[in-house]
Length: 184
Ligand SMILES: Cc1cc2nc3c(=O)[nH]c(=O)nc-3n(C[C@H](O)[C@H](O)[C@H](O)COP(=O)(O)O)c2cc1C
Image (cartoon, rainbow, N blue to C red):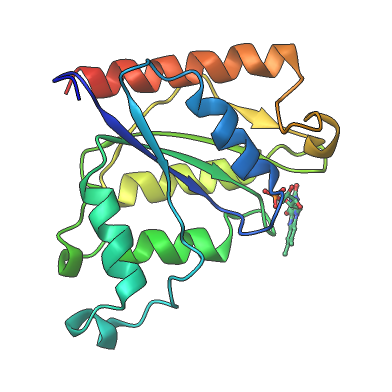
């Protein structure tokens, strides 16, 4: 692996098979520089946060925390559930925001995006998520904002995003993330 190789960890806020947010992450990773590695985190086995378990961390939490420690940057794609990010995403972030896992998120670059099947495109959920990034002392990419509405109409059968305008914005977002990660 080259010395400039960086590792980006992607987190989807939807566990749904065929999730558009997961598809979006798979699309986005194609815009990373060739020497960057990308890993899609599996947060499906992470139990509900319980402070009592911090003294004996669940295996899925340990694995997720290790993955986060190995990350130079993060990319989150979130759905919008009742104007907020999903519970599974908030739960996973809560676990790795804690000193018990040496808070592997602090000061790390992160880009966010999201998709809905309705018209909203996750604008409200992303505002909510940006507050969380501040609370967790992360280093967010602020622009461009990326929202995908009517997601069920915007992917082809192979799972590729077909909206040319969104693709350009997505590429810019990922280039900005890579630039921020590269400066560290
Ligand atoms: C519990 C729940 C609440 C939702 N609330 C909203 C909402 O507030 N705004 C919105 O635009 N879509 C809402 N949706 C629709 C989801 O954002 C939409 O299904 C999204 O595409 C799911 O992402 P996925 O394709 O990655 O699974 C909600 C869906 C669920 C299951």
